[in-house]
Length: 205
Image 1: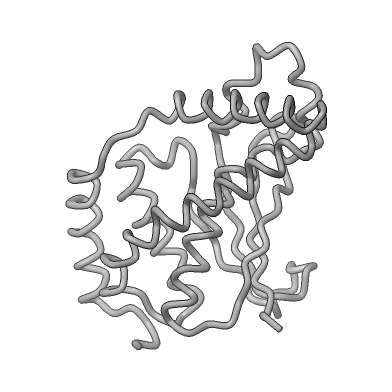
Image 2 (image 1 turned 180 degrees about the vertical axis):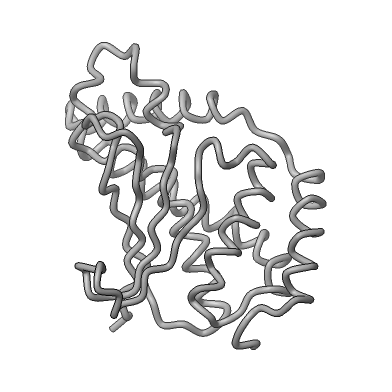
């Protein structure tokens, strides 16, 4: 396994992301967000009205489904991945383009790696930070009668769990012993100007 991506891997990635997007089954993200919202409502009915458990259940189910989908995606990524944690910044942008197309930056700006020894890293462990200028999940809640009930539930993590699943799949492939813990640290529903997701890299025991 290579230690770091080189020029050849980045060239292959630049070409491959366009081919993967061209071949991919296109999805309507707004419809996906509506489906998630309705799924939460159904879970809430099943769970005796407990909205928090309903949202948490959706997060877990979405993460597992994402792993199944992204395992096939990894068959293409294995030609370019490396052990370098900072390379994930580039790989995240390649992955998002491959899945969402060239306009992915409307929703995700890609991941920034923050090492454990960074003086601004209050968590003390390596992590990735990604910002969403527009939250896909929140976009279908603004006209929703009980929108206020979602503001403390980190609802935007639903999509981010899929990104965390992709990072874990890559880590497993290259031999890293990390578990990815996803946290939503800023949220539109709480009045923040953008959504911010942190992926903490914890050593597996």
